[in-house]
Length: 331
Ligand code: PMV
Image 1 (cartoon, protein in one colour):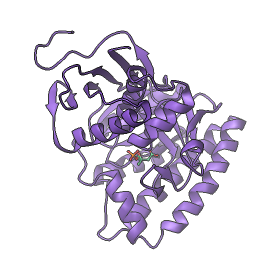
Image 2: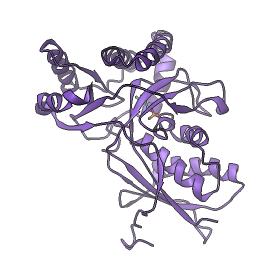
Image 3: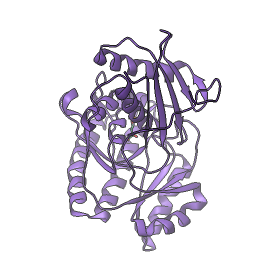
Image 4: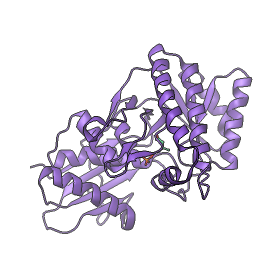
C-alpha cells in the first residue's frame, strides 16, 4: 500500500456561480455552474498514513492547524476511510499559494488536492469523475478544480450524477485584483444557508442561474467571448445582490471592489473588452482576452495587487512532498 501521496490543484473562478445547496449532506448544488481553472495560486497537499494510530493531523502553511479547518479535513477523511474500508488516520500537510479566505477559493484548490492525494493513498478510484464527485463533498466548488481549463459542474440528481467535466471554450485570460487579502467574516457555507433561509430573491436567483448556464454553454461552444463576459458579469452581480438581500445582510464587496467594477465599465467605454466577476470576498476579477490582459492589468493596477491568470491544469499527483512542520525536513 502507498504510504504517502502528494497532489497539486489550482483554484477556479466561476463564470456562472454556484450559490446554494439542494442537499447540504452530500453537497448537491441547487444549480449547475461553470468555471475556469487557474494556472496560479496552487495548493500542494501531502497525505501520509499514520502507522502509530494517532489522530488525523493537519499542517497548513507550515503550522499545525486545529479547530474548524482540522474538523473539516477529518470529516472528509472519515468519508474516504468509510469508502476505502480503512481505519488508518493521516497527517495532511498543505501549502497554499492563494491568500486563504480572501474569496479566491482556497477551499476549492485545497479539497481538490486533498481528494486526489487521499484517493491515491487510500486506494479509491482515481478517474476524473470519481475525484470530482469526492472533492465536491469537501467543498462544492472543489469538484471543478479537478478539471483542466474550463469546467461545467452538472448539478445532478444524486451523488453519482453531480460532478464537473471539461468543456471546450475560447481562450480567456483573467486579471485578479486583490483589494483585500484578509479573511472573510462569513463563510460561503454560512452565507448560502442564510440566502436560502432569508432572501426573498433566492428562487429567482436559482431560476436565472439555470438559464444563464444554458446561455453560457452556448456562448462557449460558439467561442463568443463578449457574450461570455456579459453573462459572467451579470451572473456575479446577481449573486452579490441575492447575498446582500439576506437578513442580516452579508456584503462581500467593499467600496474598493465596487471601484474596480466601475473601472472595468470605464475600460469598456474606452474600447477595451473586460468584464468583472467576484466570489464570496472583496477581490474582483476581470475577464478578458489574452491579447488584452496586459493592458487591463495596467489599467487596474491602481486598485490593488494585480495578477494575470490563464486556464490551468486540473488536480494532479506530483512527485515532491510538502515538508513537515516539526523538523523542516522532507521525510
Ligand atoms: O465551494 P464553496 O463553499 O467555497 O463555495 C464557493 C462559492 C463561490 O465561490 C462564491 C461561487 C463559485 O461558484 O465558486
